[in-house]
Image 1 (cartoon, helix red, strand yellow):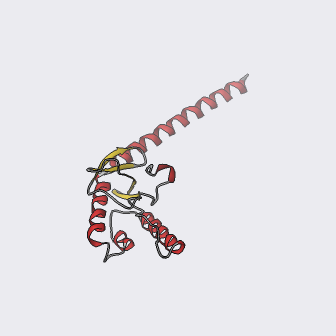
Image 2 (cartoon, rainbow, N blue to C red):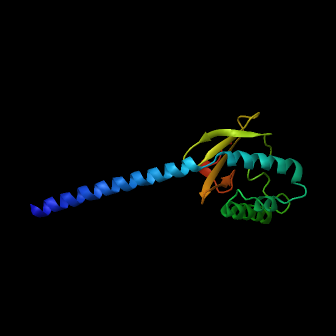
Image 3 (spheres, helix red, strand yellow):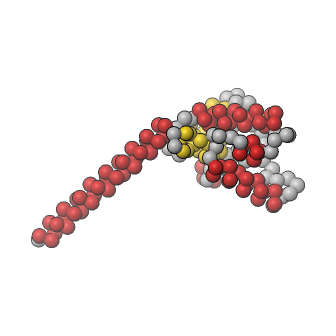
Length: 161
């Protein structure tokens, strides 16, 4: 009987500890989410439109992204990997679409459409059914773009075409 009481006490203690750690984890996620500056996503996409409209002929995409301070190193590396693989697979056509827009065409300006725990979806202001799924990440106190389009966005999270 004594062993049963001890076992019951340990079980209750473990269950209480497990609940507390889950609450702490959820609280930490909420704190990090509240620190994310979703305007970083809009700024990045609006700058990317300017790049595509004015600079694409003179500046390589990887150079443009690598010079940005609002993008994670992981994003930069994954984009380069995607472009190199596409060039190797199809030297004449490459990827065949823009990996950040995940499309060939794009709107003039973006706004936030939807925010969830891990992702933010932006949509075209004048083309509201055009959407891009993005991921933001805190590095230190700075909010950075960690994914967009097909770059660092799992297939099941990418926009539905």
